[in-house]
Length: 122
Image (cartoon, rainbow, N blue to C red; front, side, top):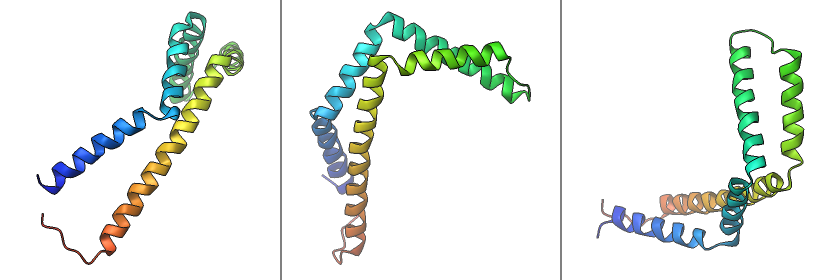
């Protein structure tokens, strides 16, 4: 087995370990709850559609109508006060923090590898 194969094997093991952590389980549960909440899903879809429309309008150098801006603000408020959405955002933030720590640890390993006097065959 060469170094690349070992690296990929370790990456798969890391993925398996991550999938067993509470941060990942909370994120999966929060996503599942949002997906199962028809009202929340419709609200999020409507907000995404309107956001896309607003971005296209601004992209053409036009100003969105007051009605569109008001509707978007109302949708945004409804989404932000939805408890399932709040749980999703919180679990996403926690998972992202975990992944940042993993990324830093990998970076530390790379730096230590660069400093090592041991030369590995390629």
